[in-house]
Length: 105
View 1 (tube, one colour):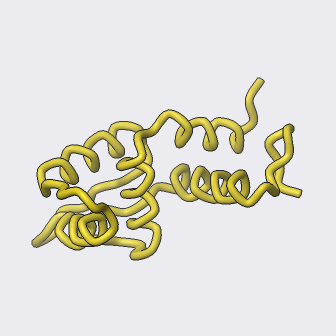
View 2 (cartoon, rainbow, N blue to C red):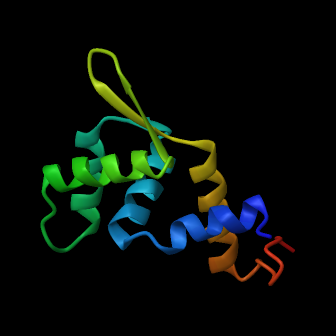
């Protein structure tokens, strides 16, 4: 049986690089509209990335329960708690502090 941490880590393992990068960019701002997220990824990638691709990727992340969408005068996106845990688990894994049992050391 998988622990919640293991499930969170797996939820990022099967994402595309663009999806993971978008989650990371969103984690740095807490809440954002799609345009600033697009600008952040455009600055990072060497190839052009369209704004519509960012919007479609955000929709995919919403469907995976990793991002929420709030619409006021504008539409803002925010990470879910699952996404925060998944990013934390991935950072631990990348740093080499993630043990085989899915716990940080």
